[in-house]
Length: 175
Image (cartoon, rainbow, N blue to C red; front, side, top):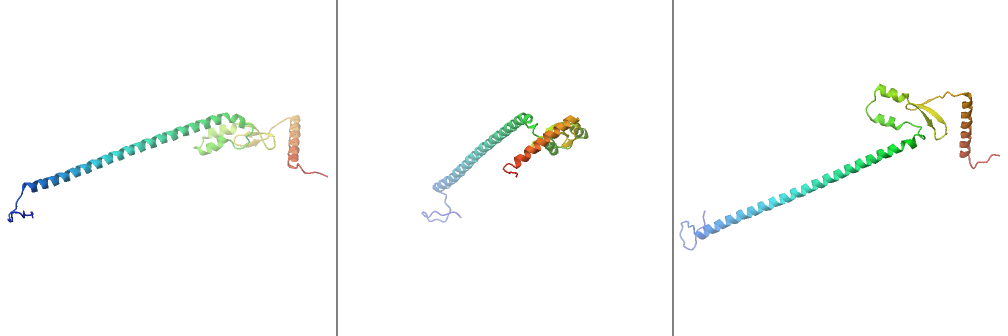
């Protein structure tokens, strides 16, 4: 089990102080090596933790920056939307944007629907140049006018139709 001391040739176990010292020094070396290894692991773990914290902080900062940019874009779009309706109102003759947006939201109540349908507005059709009365979501109403006004509307419409015909047939010559 224990190595024998070859110098004295006896079969008894001898524990010389040198052997104890070397055993102790080897044990101390192993302990020191273990301690150093543990310290290195601890340092590496601390560095990883710091790097992770930095990455998280950077991601959080980027996320906040994206949110701020998104809020700014929304605000600019909202402000732009406020300034445009006055210009667009005259040329609009299709389905109102409000209606398109309401379809995306929750269903409206009967009162809201009836209130929206009760609104009558005068719209200029950009293609023909005629004005029409539009009720609610797009129902075109027949306008009751006097005989003189009716003749004037027909004259304007005929002139508009003639102008459109000429625009389409420019370059054609009649015999």
